Image (cartoon, rainbow, N blue to C red; front, side, top):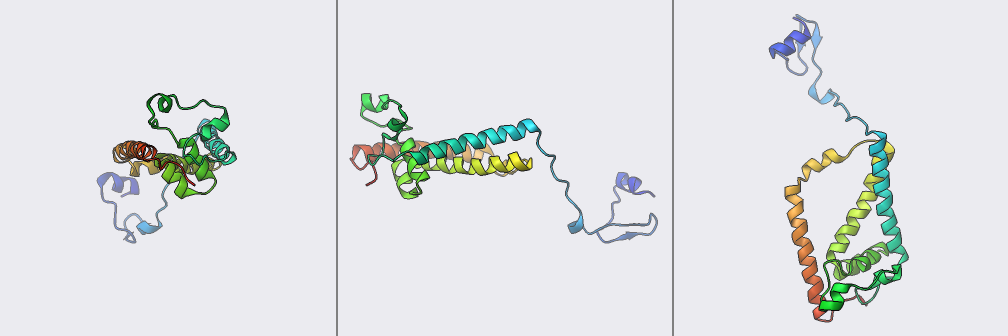
Length: 183
């Protein structure tokens, strides 16, 4: 019986066993090679490079900025306007303090980054990880998206949204109590 016929019949054999009839020896499973995933196309690699470059540009821009000791307002150094939500309501918007948090993160002060805007720290960590993963994909062509199946969106999306709301709540509390900023 040929090896093809044995596979079709379901008689595969045990690892390390010898089939005298067909003259086949089955290798132990630990020595069986796993096929590598196909390399990404050039367009996929260019997209990964562009995404890594964009995240790197954000982090380098944050490194150039001087973090505001008030907890907000670092974005004014970029020529952007003041937060209209905060001006009208007196409360910080969900993104208030993000630029300051990124600037503290880029300067290596993780405690200040987290205190000023916890979601900003999480996003800065994700941006830094994206830089490394994007360059890895761009230069090797090996996809890493198969690793995302270990983190299905149902397991991280809702917790991330809840964390974002909690971070906004934290920002509101420290602003109203006058404890916003890092001295």
